[in-house]
Length: 332
Image 1: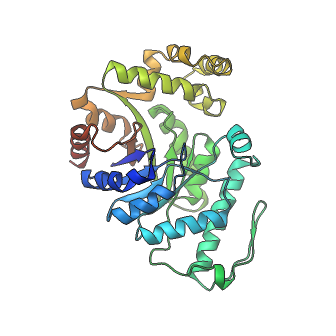
Image 2: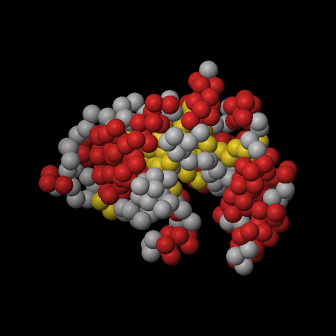
């Protein structure tokens, strides 16, 4: 099981030092996300200031960008990192696509599938003879003149991870992708009963094996009461989102999700955490003493996840000894 680091990158100027620190500590990959900042720009700096660590997005939102735009960004980052880049994409949810990005929300799984195929067609053109004739329901790409063709690179096979919760996106990952980003709001039961079986269904379509795909996730952990309360609040936020209701349904907690959705609509954010019981907390979060944390993570996720990231973002010069101990234990 690989152990990765995540960062929110509040300032691009901090990225070189952060990336060097993450690599020096021995993490396997550094993930950026699309929250308050662009997820790709920090990785260009990280590629320049590291040599071995993988670099990826967890995630970049797919639909505000075209396949060709994403293809260019990924091609350049793959070349700059000498083959260490992982393109992680997510669909986001309808209100954000329509109201935050101002784009059209339509058939997300089918559209993401076509976007992946279109990007690979673009990459094949650049690595090959430059000709492209991709015609789909959502995207048509038939023009690639030499002036706009960056040409071949040394490592043209760029891994694509997609993120999701529900069955269709799990199946799409199994069919076409090299990885799947499990949403942090999950349980071991949901992984066993929903995520992995649906990935396997997708793999059957293209005759692939489980070893062809890495399942990755940020995981909630809590080692003291203060961390428990922080995680409880975050879980309540995710549990209020209708798109993630399937996770609650697996445990028979649909009514809690409906109640949290109503509370969120009334902006009762402070009160929502109280709806997450200790039983629910321990299903969605690894609760353990600091010296038992690695064993607890492995006990829960061995056979379910191939790589994990702690939900808490990495910050240089903070909790350094904790990170060292955790990474050392994972490497052993």
